[in-house]
Length: 100
Image (cartoon, rainbow, N blue to C red; front, side, top):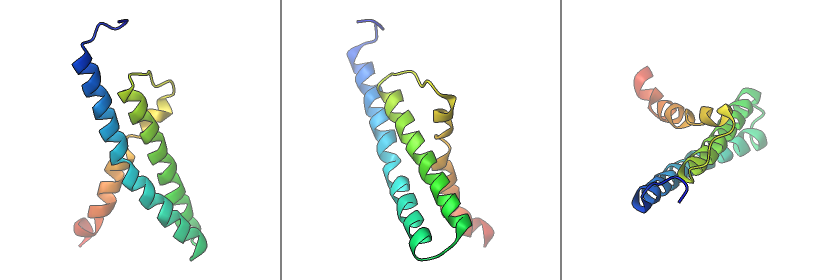
């Protein structure tokens, strides 16, 4: 073994990475559906830009979570930026309560 970590610790890290990546699947699907509706049903350029940006960010976060779980070094610091979309998504869900 190159890193000297115990097998249960490596397995737990891999499972946490899998759970983190799975948690990003639903926001990524929402971004894809909203982007499709914004492009096909309405001609709302700001909405298209927003949902495209959110989808890319969720994709980057998913890749970062998988790489973290596999204990591979994240080469690009931009991949770490993808960890913010889940927080922004939760804020978006709760915004009507804050505004009203």
